[in-house]
Length: 159
Image 1 (cartoon, rainbow, N blue to C red):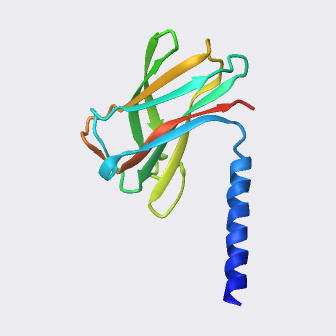
Image 2: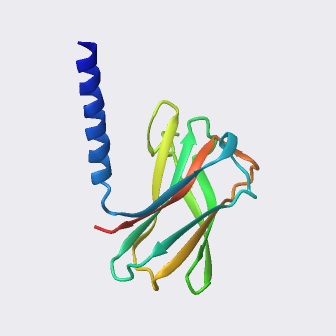
């Protein structure tokens, strides 16, 4: 009886994982970097590279942040430096809102871990094909910044 139950649970879990992967067909790129000891040092620049070939389809660009509920602020300032295939750089200062005015976390989560996917650019068309580099730096006055677990970028085709 236990073997049958174990088999059913295993098959159900695999089907669930495959269904989650199939639902994410709009993703062009997504990568998150784990921060050691859940602390983001200002000198710890998160560097992500991806090849972009589609210059026709509009894309949505997101900043991903995973924080623990012990994070002491409702926002997070970051610097985002984007380098194009032609080696042109642009730098943006972004304020990411992680909690509302009452202190309720806005991301998805359970317990004390919250995942945030915050829209940075909507319906953006990449100007040229090739390798793009994205660098994220925390821009808060606290160094190191505790209770930030992961940060990254997501690029998806706009609906």
